[in-house]
Image 1 (cartoon, rainbow, N blue to C red):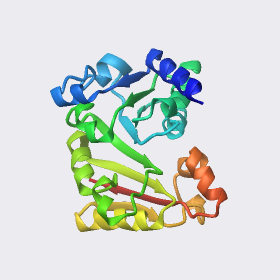
Image 2: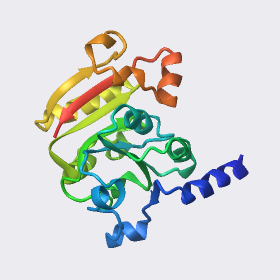
Image 3: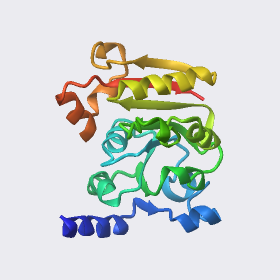
Image 4: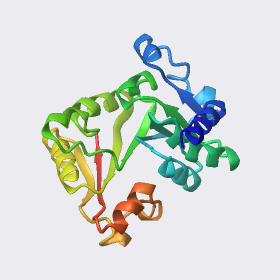
Amino acid sequence: MAKRKLKKFAEVNSFDNCFFLSFEQAKEDSFQLKGKWHQAYFKNNNPIVLELGCGKGEYSVGLAKRYPDKNFIGVDIKGNRIHTGAKIAVENKMNNVAFIRTRIDFIESCFSEYEVSEIWITFPDPQPQKTRERKRLTNMMFINRYQKILIPNGKINLKTDSEPFYAYSKEVASNNGFAILDSTNNLYLNPNLRDESLTSIRTYYEKKFSEKGFNICYLKFEV
């Protein structure tokens, strides 16, 4: 297992579509692509969409295939997770998808103001303990960071199997005056009423939780 992880880690470091932001770079604000993603990497001005805590990158790759007129970037701290999506993108010569290995706390060091159009948060750790509320990715501390890189009226999408986390996130959005564009605590109850990409692209964790009988919750709001 350790050898396989090391091999994946080495491959990720060799992929042209993968980047690493260290603590030192974040502290010094010296990430080479900050503010330059359009011209230096994607070579176009298409909207940039982030998948935070992307894991294996299923959503980043799935959306990139579906929307060639948009650019997608998956962010996760685990290089061996990113490996799956990054390798698929390399093998399929997908030029509209990339990955960053870093902590989501450092997201402001990866992008400049108004550089991102939309954010997806797919099956994050719900951090259910009250003492860990500040680590929830829909906590206002994180949303304040997202707002600094999002365009005005940028969109945030959340998919989760945790109904308490869904309810918490919806309450955060409502209490802070963000427009809720869509919300459901059972996405697959009426799938035809929603964007088809919500139900046709399923992450590893979504499949796992669905098979165990958990409802899939979805929230979309504008900040």
